[in-house]
Image (cartoon, rainbow, N blue to C red; front, side, top):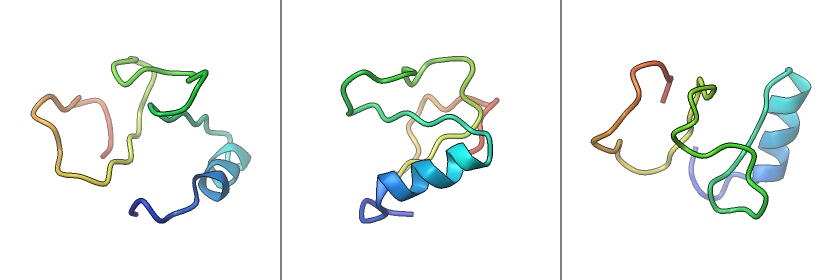
Length: 57
């Protein structure tokens, strides 16, 4: 995935499968990046030095 993937379409798919979605750059975010409830994280840049071992990247 990259930046050109429409977030709205991705959010519909994830929510229809029972998931929850949030982005760090939108107003009223539901989760912050360090939230322990996050199990999967999509990023379009190299992994940061502080990755969480309980997540799928």
